[in-house]
Every structure is written in structure tokens, then in C-alpha cells.
Length: 155
Image (cartoon, rainbow, N blue to C red; front, side, top):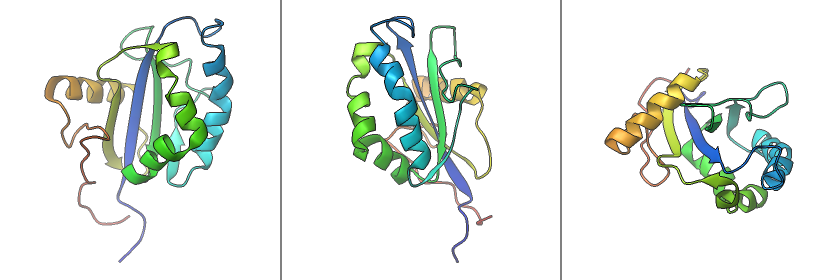
């Protein structure tokens, strides 16, 4: 029948910076924020991302004041995967993650939301805790173990 999807994919990844954002160590990361965010915004299947007045999410934190958050909504797992792993500029930054951020587990959660819904920072914490406690489930999963969108009539 077609029509708009009934669900979109929320994604969060979190990171604990190894230094302050204004440090020399994170200078390349900060320099890449605007261009990578612009590429995400223009990517096929992109719906929304958390951002402040500066156009990024570096002012938002979860769990405690040291954990940065990147929260976005996509039309599908495939659209998000294509951006994350096929966009050369994003992939180049992703490969340098360990230069800027400490190890965290879990650092990624994906989950389905009704189309038109905006996830919250509370949702982020809940979904990451779910993966930590139960591993990937239909309520919170990863690229490696993903789940199909819930069945539902198109909007």
C-alpha cells in the first residue's frame, strides 16, 4: 500500500571525552562536527538530530556531566548504516574515535519509535541501561543484532 512509515529508528551513541572540548587533543573532533553534522542532515533517510543553538549536541550530557550524547532519528536501520559506514567523511572521523574518547560499553543503542516522535535524554539512558542489563532486544539493539520495526499501519 505504501505511505509513510509507521516507525522511525532512534539512535544514540555516547562518549566520554579524554580531554576538554577546547583542548588541542579534541581540536580535530570539534573541527569535524559541523561538516559531519551537515552531511548527516543531508543524508538519505535522515529525520532529526538533537542540537543546541550552536548546531551540535556537545552541550548535552547523559548519566553524568562527563558523557556526551549524539541522538538522531532515521527512517530505517539501512539508512543509518549507510551514513555511518558508507559516508567517507563520517567514517574517517569514526575511525579516530579512540583518539578522543575513552572506552564505554554500551556506547550505542538503536530503537524504534512511532514516526513523528522525538526521543528524549531520558529515553537514551533507559535504552543504554536495557542493553547493558539484557543485551540487544527489540526494545534496544545494535547494528550487529538489529530488529525489524514493529508492525503497524502506515500513518
